[in-house]
Image: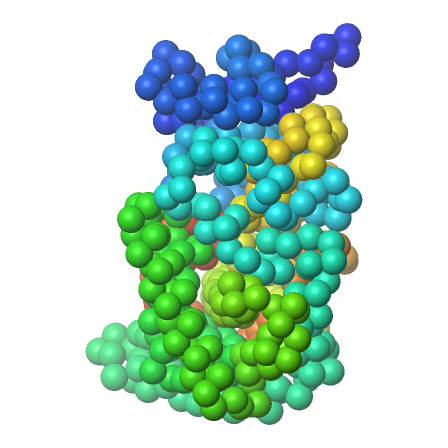
Length: 465
């Protein structure tokens, strides 16, 4: 699908398909011989974009089950900073893997978030029940551009400024202390002294904070997490599972909005409703629900993974843990190096070039669904140096990662995520400096996702000196 500039200025098109065949070097590749039944769908997509589909160069077929992304990222980056991929359902796409290329792509004026710029999503080529459509169909600032994006972002931006977030510090510290008590209690009640850090600490901390900000009652929080994981994080789900979860999630968010409409409070949902009812042209009902969904997902799923990944990194790099415990490095350094080295989001959908876009020696055709390869860019040796695979909290320039994005869509919740993770890690290892993994890292179950990047469970032994 990408046009690669070769010798003598010639172009070749990399063809993509729908179902994996086994290629050389263990890669999942596509060709017409192994997947003849899927090529009519692919050819229809290619024809709609005006491309030729006759060149047999392979594309990587994305595994819906995901797993640790780093070996795959290294393999694909070796081919170039932008790669053709085939998403579950046989949908051709591209992923940007290089740091400089991703930085350029994320802030490029000819790249849009609005799915109306993707013909295959609008002409019936990609079916309505395609699970990844949830990243294109929801209405909110994450699928808006230009003036619409600025309008929607302005409604929530004030709640996440550095000054406003700092006011949350006492509450975050209070929640952290209570959850550390819970973690220690769970381990004490276990015959082997083991507790799941994700269940007892890394999840309830950011989930509680964002739900309090949104005015979500306790009774809904666990179910909201389950639904957002199914809709946004898990990528090995069936269309029926995703559609059912979307319907339930939208309904539950509508129930929460109705409760806040009936009894407004000092929370973000009430503020959004007031903006809608006071200025009807500022926020539609669909945008209200879409914004609530975005705040909920971005406000806890990514921070959950960030805290989990940082704990895994420190437990498997005790020299780095010693540096920060001895005051030779800051906890903020741990957060930034984790965001670079093992970020919470791997490949995130979607953006669409509004014209044929030259990038990294290739041309991404207009309308192509493109994923941002955050974990790949974080270990790009061309930018981070030959030791990019090494976890080093003293690394100069570690904060120049792209895990919070770049440009107009830079993560509005970045200050909150940084504060939560910094407090969580400092308090966790201050109380349990000898905390360690209860099983070898290789045995930890990975998230079933190529979007989220972490583990499903994190059993630890929280030992106090």
